[in-house]
Amino acid sequence: MVERLLKLSTVAERLDVSVSTVRRLITAGHIHAVHVDYVRNGNAPSGPLRVPESEVERLTERQAA
View 1 (spheres, helix red, strand yellow):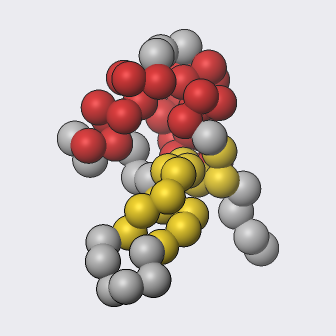
View 2 (view 1 turned 180 degrees about the vertical axis):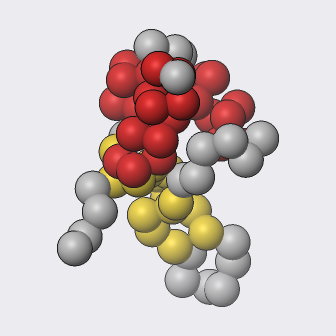
């Protein structure tokens, strides 16, 4: 099964925080995110970040507890 990847704006809306906060949580390692495109010259991953829907579910369950 392929997991749905969400835009940072969608994640922010679901968590009721700003996109900047989502970026900070990703940088701090609290939210797993992936780049959906890669540089072809062997450089570091780039392109838009996406968050697996399971990460948002994990965080919303944790907020509810």
